Length: 101
Image 1 (cartoon, one colour):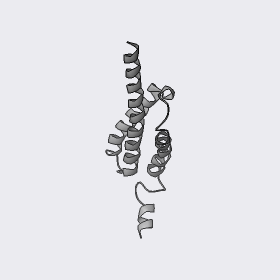
Image 2: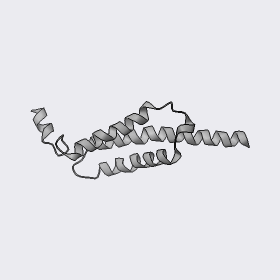
Image 3: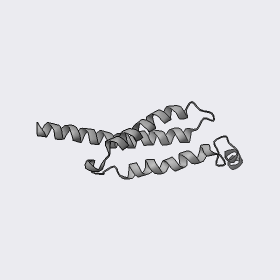
Image 4: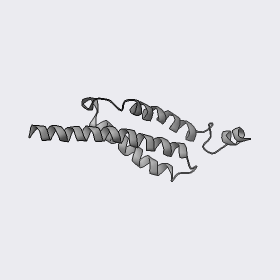
């Protein structure tokens, strides 16, 4: 049935192609749970790296075999959540510069 087909799939639960994205969901989830995090506690370097990782690996996940939509989805989530934090940090930095000038 459906469970057997899922279990023996190329990106099924008995392969690394399944568990790597599942653990990456925790990174994305942590970023999503802190959407109201103060901008002074947001690391520009860390969120720049996370945003670029999400962007680049979304594309990569659609090129590799086996095609892994779970990996693509988690990278899109990582890109969006960390990009949101990065944008907030950059907007806040621009606002501070404008206020000081």
